[in-house]
Image (tube, rainbow, N blue to C red):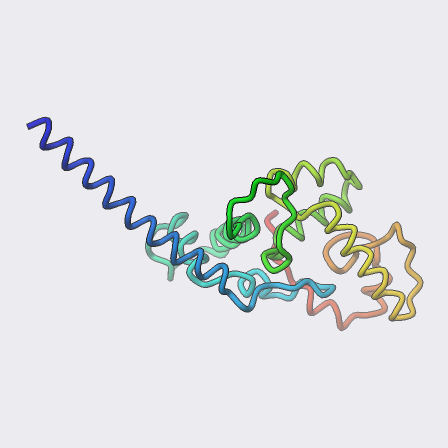
Length: 197
């Protein structure tokens, strides 16, 4: 009797593993073939989080967090599912790599890790903290943040605004360039980003 139970349990485990393996293949295929994605262009549009993720990845994470009913969800719970799904997308690699470098493909840099890295950098100006968070797979690299800041300063110069380099990043996400928002109020409508409290 014990042998029969052990074999039945083993078959159940193998069956569950096969189902999970099929789900993983479907989700990974969706991730690597997803065309919309997110390309940072100076602001975070209101639906940038939702639009940066393949639907099946959003549904899977939502079902893991909230159960199989995906229609009745609290907006806060939806935000947590979006954040986790973006972290999965951000850290997903096509093939296992032997390097310790965590430079992510720009195609797979959704809004949340970008927002978090920029938020940490503008609040603390700490290269080390950003690098630790990047090593943990939580935000973009320090080099990526500097690249975005450089692009932002360049964009400001093209708009013929005088922006001191130490005050990079305002309306995009965070702090100082209040003058930029004041001068460009039309940009304010593009910048609705639901960040966790």
